[in-house]
Image (cartoon, rainbow, N blue to C red; front, side):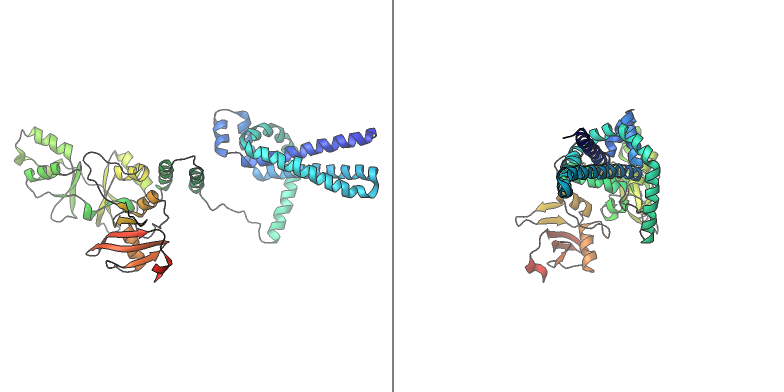
Amino acid sequence: MTLAELLTVAAIVLLIALSAFFSGSETALTAARRSRIHHLASEGDARAGLVARLIARRERMIGAILLGNNAVNILASTLAAGLMIGLVGEAGIAYATITMTLLVVVFAEVLPKTYAIRHADRAALAVAPILRPIIAALAPITAALQTVVIGLLRMVGAGGEGRWSWSVADEIRGVVDLHAREGGIRKHYRDMLRSVLDLAEVEVGEIMVHRRDMVTISAALAPADIVAQVLASPFTRIPLWRDEPDNIVGVLHAKSLLQAVQAQAGDIDQLDVVSLAIEPWFVPDTTSLANQLTAFRGRRAHFALVVDEYGALMGLVTLEDILEEIVGDITDEHDRPTGGVRRTPDGGYLVDGAVTIRDLNRDLDWRLPDDAAATIAGLVIHEARRIPKVGQVFLFHGCRFEIMGREGNRLTALRIHPRPSESDAG
């Protein structure tokens, strides 16, 4: 083999190595974790800052890499074809095509990209300083090519800038779910992270204590009776009403009441209980949990009354209610145990009608919609378009719902089976 042929072979090897560099760089920079790169850049890592700047101008980066990659691949193939033709004649074109295809696929595509995917962050940090001057040098060519490409896309009606329909919160949810499926995050922590992301989308009307279940005290009662009711209640903050239960005139704190009782030296009848109550705070039922949590912190309050658009009392919401949306039920020695969901031997669940759809989805990993109703009973009524009778069965959202209990117009108990049989469809 002559010196010229040896130099040609060396040039082909060098060009394949450059092709491998470009291919691996493209994969590494597109697969690098932006959160990790941002963290390193914030700590002063110069290479991470360079990677972040390259990723920020992704189209320019990819255009330069593809331009360089295709240029070296075409040049390597041309040299190989010329070399093989000189060695074996016209059949050398076929030999060069087969040989270069194998070399490019294995050594310039699959091998570097596989390594880059497995070590994306490390590879991105390594190639960024080398790529920066190459991208800068090719910038005029890539800009011209991008202009031509955009013009062609506009000719076919696809020139508008595409916008990713997911929000950042949706992207984080996807990452959390992915790690949870792979076993990297326990279900409890996954639920907590998703609940934090949902705070801006859930309204207080969906988690509030309904006024039917509120513990309130009439301000017209004798002070001794009010003290007795407060002591009998498991709650520290109790609304006081006058004339009618919906007319809340104040919120009484048990600690303030006990301090006043002590100050009276046992003369409870002289207590002015209403004066001890703080002014009630009313919030719209459409307030998001994120805004309400911020408001609680700003006012240093733990308790608010919820009203609808007409100002009618709907219920109450506490700081603990919002925290429970994140971490799950919080109970102490004074909380009353509540039933909610009980597994049945047939694989179904006996569910209290007041259980919220969000809690059911979170506990059982279901996907029942919660946009039209807050509780499971409300969902059944919404789907049935009527108030069902005991014994009626409904199939929707992939579940079988049997009405087990009803009081007045309220569904108190349902049996839910997540996989209804085909025979139930009638």
